[in-house]
Length: 399
Image 1 (cartoon, helix red, strand yellow):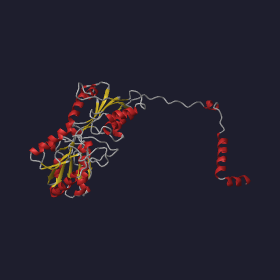
Image 2: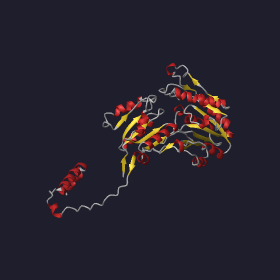
Image 3: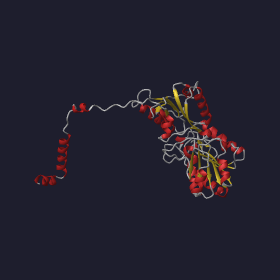
Image 4: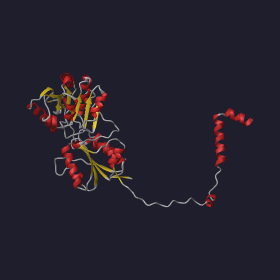
């Protein structure tokens, strides 16, 4: 039998506070647990508002939203991972912080963990791929949410025969990107989430330049969308494509989490697979090809928790999601067996066999009150028949 775990702590990231905070919270609650939800300090407002809306619906103490700064004293996340009452921690964030969460959970009551961590997701473009469609698809896959997505395409390997053609089409699409206020329907890319993230992205691009990388488009921060002073946050970064880099460069080896992507040529499928898998991460990957049979074969050889063919970073609603190696532990999000196993504890009960209860004596049945069911049923059928076929009923009475 399965039983709820008890208190589940959900530590949500800033890049998707509703989906990555409330989906595990709702699932944990549905499995009978109580939840303490801690949003990132950069994005607490949506979480607080939803918690406010749920307050009159849920019993007191079933759902608790905790906010606080990560810069003062003991962090809220550290308090949750150390508290003995918490029986499971669900964390989405960087691999570095995830390892600390796992260590704290092991040292404080062996808490269960569900970790969705960083990724350095490769995309392989074969020579038979439709260049224009692939450029459009990978623009969305790489720059979705301004690249601030754990499974966004972060390294693109293109077969050398179509490399120049693809790079040209990819840069053309990136230069057309519409930057602006995220509340505007026409906006494709908004600003980065913080000055810390802007600094990180800038450092990766400058490091690539120092090591011989060429920036073909973008390559720097911008004040904001032209003519839209109200959206000027100082955190906009132009969609950037870098070439002439390889493994050993920070931009290729690390998770950039921003609107920057390196594009590199390869000779054959084996080289592409080897380079795609040469990472400590394993969250997402994609293969782009018109030869679907070959694409499916390559997809099965890529080391990633989710692999797409001719698409990238498109989530399937009822499919479990998670990473391999340093990209996390556990799978969840299927709203089915995986979620049930993550938010409940299974027990084996070796129960005693209870003797069967004998039926009541026949004599006791005689004492039951008699009900004229047959007569009542006959009367109801007659009334129903009169309403449905009155003319037939008259014929029956005459007969």
